[in-house]
Length: 373
Image (cartoon, rainbow, N blue to C red):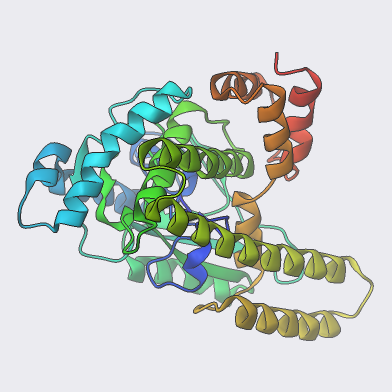
């Protein structure tokens, strides 16, 4: 699931800490891609979250009922000129991504106008004194550390017993999600932001989600989302350079948002490192809890977060922001060629991982050492 969720103090999508609509993990990404799998899961054995399967299926159907062609939406005079102009950019963004190695799909040929501020709300949970996420397992997508709900109240109801059981729980908005190529994903109204950065962020979302339809490693959420964030961030910059120019208002505004996101990402990273050391220390639990609250209070003030922060918030940030130096090094090793970069990463699809990989850089390093072959 984006998660611009809603993925992400991710660089450039980090605003969901401070904006109601949310861009930190705003793309939602792989988390909400569980939705289609769960609809199919209803036909299989072993599905324990029957209510979740039902809402996922109905939510996906509600999207289909609201769909209109992207061309019709971009010509509809009842919409603002700005929205129509941005919708007309989507085919250009798709072709740009395909030229750089992303798989051509039928995605983003349709549009859905939503009457809510997010496409889905993503629930995640983490132990209160250790960065260990609660996970759920399903056919097709494997193990995931969060679940996306189409209705906010349903997400809150699902979160309540997790909180009661002692988990740190985070409920965040996601502006988009991918069905990994199983369905034709629409452009959603929640993918369009309000400022001059809108073109760059729309490109980022489309390219991020297109990566999920291009390359998916079952059960490896952190790797999948961090890779999609890296691809969306870097290719969106190139797209703006090519489409509107490196000194355009759109590029300037987008890069300003990226820089703000990077500052928030550093603050989140530092808090994670501080707390991880605290949790691994021999300090009494009461002392750990007190220090944790102090660290999170400072962090919330520093980044202007509008919603509570806890371990689930920080561990989800790591899902979208791991292995960036190594991914950059791999791209350089591949001579800056995105098709070669993606070709090298596809080798990971054939690997058998015994568990979800926490260190994305360590997974990527052998590909660098192999010289992008």
